[in-house]
Structure formats: structure tokens, C-alpha cells
Amino acid sequence: MCVFSLEADQYEEWSYSLALQAATYGGPLVTMYALRQNDALGPNPKAPPNAIWRMENISTPQLSQEAGYVTPNVNVVYGFGFMDLRREPIVLEAPDSNNRYYMVEIIDMWTNAFAYVGGKATGYGGGKFLLAGPGWKGEVPEGMHRIDCPTPWVLLQPRVHIYRAGKVDLAGAKRILNGIRTTPLSEFSGKKANRTVRYNYPVPESVHPELPVSVLDYKDPLQFWEILSLAMNENPPPKDQVAALLPLFQPLGIELGKKWERRKVDPKMLASMKKAAQQIGAILNGLPIGTQMNGASFPPPTIGNFGTDYFTRAIIARVGLTANTPVESVYWMYTRDQNGDPLTGSKKYTMLFKAGIPYEEPGFWSITMYDAKNNYTVPNKINRYMLGSDSKDLKKNPDGSFTIYVQVDSPGRELESNWLPSPPGPFYLIPRAYQPKRETIGILKNPKSWPVPALIPQ
Image 1 (cartoon, rainbow, N blue to C red):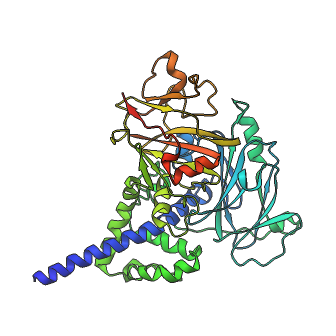
Image 2 (cartoon, rainbow, N blue to C red):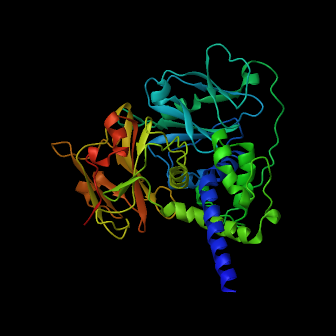
Image 3 (tube, rainbow, N blue to C red):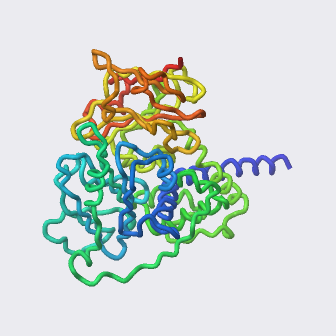
């Protein structure tokens, strides 16, 4: 009897471990499926497939929740557009921005940023680009640059800098955003467009629909696996992963080319899969990533286009979905203070920057505040969500250094220009540099190579 009990315990431990690894691998794909449903396929889509939803403003707390998008940048105005490349390619037109910073991140359904238009990749002069799905063999129209996409669905995420000459110019940014257009190739070529496609995907049923889709909290936890199977069969992973990794997940019933059916899975395995699906979002939200220093986590250089770094990919999909590659943008995250204690609005902190984060024009740097309870920006009475190179009132010392005050209440009128309001509860901060200089990219490999500040409790 004891032997059988031991065997049962061992099987439960092994099956849960396997399910947890499969959820780590597949979580980013499930998140993208849910974001597509939220933005493009729901009853009130922001924009239908093959079109771009252009946000009306920066990601205020309200707009963050509407987008369902985790940890947004507030120096830019965003666009979101899911492209269905199964029938034909999509033409992406980018405008000449007169050297205003913008870029279009192109992301596969496994959250890899495999290509860019604008930014460092192609500059700011504009152009026409053909997004071709896997296996497409047609002719590329003259004057277009072909971009081969690894999955049949991809996400276009434009970002346009809202500041011009140190002042907010939302109208100018939106003109650039409106100039980023998508058109099916047949329509662009003046031919009769393919018939309208009807989409009938299972709808993710979240416990907390007001939270980002990356939370992965489903009323029926096993829906996670149904979505993973469906999305994987529609958007297969690279062939090397199919051959080397997917056989490991066969005991879970997760196989390429087969629909996952819960009734065909061993009941004990199914129980482990349910447990893993219930816990994966919270686990990923709390895991450290990369190098730890001064209360900050520095992701590895694989961020953005992860290859086989599934661990980093899963965490970033949870807390920083659609993060860019370091060539285009560098990030790190503060969750703790100098003493290693979690950040909380019940305390006051200072951060001494010896200099701003190095970037190249027309890029920018910033440090943004987020509520750890929902991963959105923080409501506050001065509507300030970040400080950085766009904060022209930021008071600096004669040597160029400056102190940022991180707390719930104003530090006083004389210091308010350097105040970054926090929520009353737990929070985290993310510094960013767009169009980063080489020394900024190097921080990800060696955080000691640049004077990274710490949050010092007062």
C-alpha cells in the first residue's frame, strides 16, 4: 500500500511538473490568442483583422484596461492590428515622419518580434512592405520590400512618439499613426478582394476580464489547454521545436495536428493540467528574470526575439507583452528597493540618476510607474505616469544628475517637477530607452557598465 501511495505521489509530482513546463512554453501563444479576441474578434472589436486599431491617446489607466495590454509605454500612442495572412499577403504602408520617432513592431503569435518597419530598422522615410505568410510564392509588386512572417497570424504594433521639441503633440503623432496603413494585396492591386472571412474562435472566459489578457485566469482552467491546442495548430512553432520539444508534451495530449480533448487525457494528468493552468499566470508574475542588481531585474539579450529561451519569453509575455528587441528598445524592471524589500506606496523613495539613459535622436528615454495589482498605469491627480527625456521641467543638478521622488503624495511644490506618483499599494517601475545607444544595450549583459540607480527608502 505504501509503495502504491509513493508511486501515486511521484506521478502527481511528475505530471504537474510536465504540465507546468508546457504551460510555460505555451502561455505566450495563449496570451496572443486572447489579445486577438479582445482587440480584433470580440463582439465590439477595436479593429477587425487586417486593420489597425489606433488608440486615441496615450495608455492612461482607462485606455490600458480597454486595450487589455500589460505594462504600456506612455511616451507613445499605440496601434494594434492583427493580420490574417492565410489567404493572401497584406501591404503595410509606412509614412515619412519628418524624423519623428516611430516604428511598427511585427510580432508572431509566439510573441517574437521578428521584423520592424521604422525605428532603427528602416528609418523614418516611409515605404511599402509586403507581409507574406508561410509558404506564399506570389510575386512581390515593384517597389515593395517583402517580409516573410513565420506564423499565419501576426500582430502589428505601431508606436509613435507624442512629443515634438519637448512638447506634447498628440495631433502630430496621430497623423503619423494614421499614415501607417494595411491593405490586402488583392485590394491594393485593384483586383477583387477575397470574400469576407467569418471567424468562429472559442472565446476565452476570464475570471477577471478587467485585468490584462496575460493574467491567464480562466473560469474553466482547462480552457487554457483547449486554446493552446487550437492556436498551436493554427500557428505552428518552428520545425526544430516541433521535432525536439513537442514529443515531450504527448502525455498531456498536446500534439501538433490533433485537437486536444480532455476526455482522452488520464484523469490524474488532467488534474495536474488544471492545477498548472490555474497557477501559471501568478507564478510567471512573481519569477525573477535575468540579472538582479539594485532591486532591478535586467532581462537577457534574448528579450523580444527569444529563440529557445522559453523561460524569458513566458515571463515577458506575462508582465511585458510584445517587448522589443534590444536593438530597438532597452528595458529593465524595478520591483524592490535598495534593501531588497518590495516596492510599496506606504513608503517614500528617491532615485538618483547620474545621467539620463543614453539614446540616439529621435529616440527618447523614460521611467514609468505601474500598479502591481493590475499592470496598468497609475491614476493620480497630476496625470503623470512617467518622467524622462520628454520631461523638460525635470530639475537637474549642475553636473547633469537629478533625483526622482517616488511616493503617493507630492514632495512639495519645489520638488514636484521630479515627482513620479505611486499607488498606495504595491507597484513596479520600468525604465526604457528607444533607439538606445550601444552602452545602453550593454546594460543587459552587464548592469554594472552604467550607473544604474536604486530606489532608496526614506
